[in-house]
Image (cartoon, rainbow, N blue to C red; front, side, top):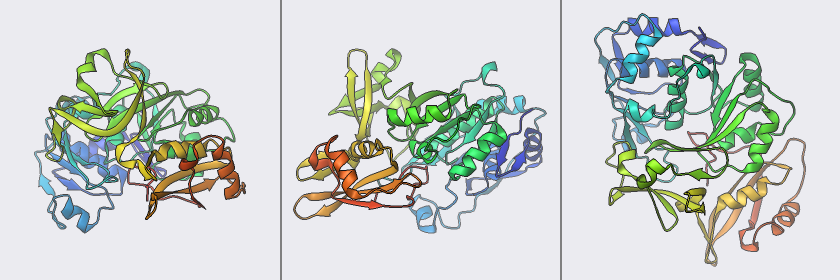
Length: 406
């Protein structure tokens, strides 16, 4: 049997996991841990014993705990009835039927985090379990307390695959882990994949690459395909509120016919039916639909093919024009000298906002602002060209591994 978890060369076996579960007589209801094995062990004990659990980021501050509706020194340890599982299959059967309520929080990047309650069914609805998924090794590149990390966990665990922790790892550490442990699958944000550029050599063990969490560009897909030539590439649309919803093989998503009445489009914003959502008192619904804040554009309205344009609350007012920062970022990222970029607005008394860009160049590259602006002037409108450009060595990331807008 493959190992359960490899975390910075600490290897945990499935037999060890079963033994630790069978020895437990308590679990933590509101749990914070920066140790991935401890986190998953506590999570599995909770749902296997049919108990509810709140998942908290390991670096939550006292004020954030209070804002999340929890006391700073919340007593979380709860006793459980003894558990005993002879095999991982027995454990899986119990988990799939569990009635536990799992509380997670949105990232809070666009305001106060919202509390969402999910069931095992909603968290694992996208799991593919078959003989073709046996023997896989997953690069675990998400925060485990958020929806994407949980979905990767359920996919891997349901097929008794191995998880290799590469979240918040450096480019060198990621490549070393891929080679050392023959990683076959990675699901991550475009920000994570851009960390792996530029292309230097091929890695042939990767069979599947999944993009999620942010808008990605075809150029990035092409560059990642050079690094992992044997990998099939998918794009996934998911949210904390609804879990996994749509999968595509490029930037265009299709609403399945059976789900057509579960989605609505109003003023280019995607709305999701209440029936697809987790439970929450923090979600505002209109006529049974939740406004996602995602602006989309139909490319084939008859057949419901569309692509994502931006987040509604990220549009920047520049002199009366609504600028999509993602569009500007993608234009900058099309320059071969650029590894990463983030665009944001700063208040201006005349224009409302001026556009600013922070840019990280590829290693060994040295260009100036004038070359950036000259390139952009040929590819986007003048009002979308950043007035201020700053070259940086690194970026601040959110807890979910996305670029943090200032």
